[in-house]
Length: 165
Image 1: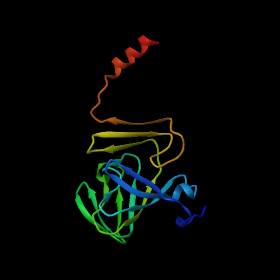
Image 2 (image 1 turned 90 degrees about the horizontal axis):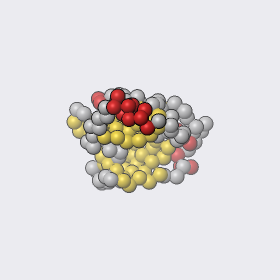
Image 3 (image 1 turned 60 degrees about the horizontal axis):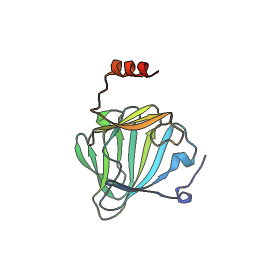
Image 4 (image 1 turned 120 degrees about the vertical axis):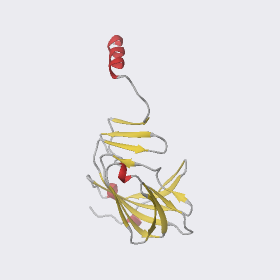
């Protein structure tokens, strides 16, 4: 299906240190297994918190502006025409920062696999996505965010559940 980004409205995000605008191109084009969103970060703004996916590769292509990419091997500059890929493991951790005076516009691509665990190293949390991948709009059978350090004794929890039934 064909869409033009000028026909789509921006979704505005402003949550706990993440401020950006996004147009979900792949959703509008009814794509199933490929995600693509147009992002715009205003000056001095940041994208999603630093994270990586365990099932989904991502890639970024800079359309306009300058910024900085936080990655496991350090920060690097982002400029128009730049392309970066993010593997589906801790090597793919990333966060985009606009430290320039003009908006930063880029495309973000993703495989759309589920289930996926998205790890947020700074907050030591993990997002669980089952039934629809991150960025997907289908109903999820399981979705939530959990502390990485939470430890539940499996057999004790099974025994407690058995007693309750």
